[in-house]
Length: 75
Image (cartoon, rainbow, N blue to C red; front, side):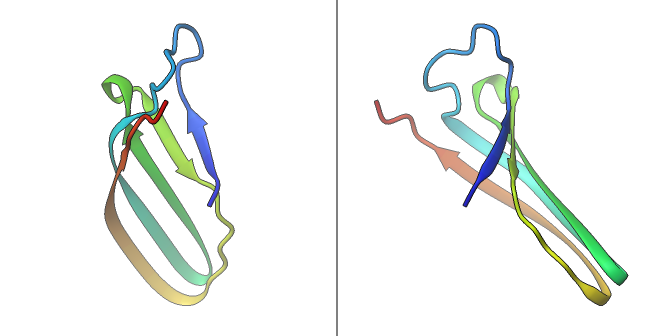
């Protein structure tokens, strides 16, 4: 699994990704579909994790979800 990480670049300490993350996901398809997922959390909820995925759908579909993730710093 690969993740895109969006975080403040200046003064970000080692282990800053550790913490609780919560987020949402959604997909919609009417013919050809698209989807998106994002998790926010970490150091003072300033970090966004974006799972990198390729998805393709065809047909009629709508889905919404809530997700959570805990990252622990292991030096």
